[in-house]
Length: 198
Image 1 (cartoon, one colour):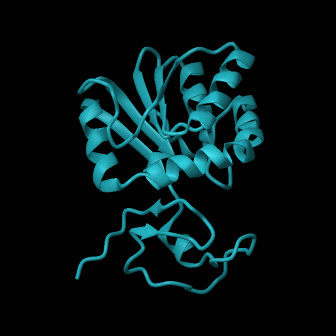
Image 2 (image 1 turned 45 degrees about the vertical axis):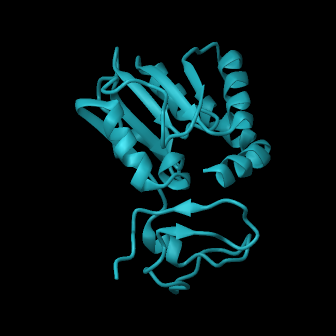
């Protein structure tokens, strides 16, 4: 987590404009293809009064979407720089919800406090699933929902190691060992739910 915290504090400025555009959207749009919520129906139909937590909130655009739908939201992120952008966007859009500088693997909130835990390319990609998933379970009330979005394993297997090179139609790495990926020239560590057993 320390490597990823440092990575995101440095790279936060590169994601500010993307976060601003996401805050502007009236309807949530998910993933790299920005598929509309009306098509996917990822979120619960009724969020009014629900307690929600976004794990790895970054610029907190998902938290903003939840708050606009009536949820009481807490956003957690490890990057001070990302949270600074999120706070600026809160002021700009006159939208208030709690933001916490913290680690999704050890969230400073009480047990069973939330109806919904969500992560879009946040904790689900940048935190160890052996730690953040049990933490999400601890935070959720009985019957609570966990929603998370990451790249597909197949997509990850076909991405060249070089920056700015498009995804190929060939497998470029084995599926075994892709639980933890360290890309050349990237100080961060990506995690995937796939764990090698041998």
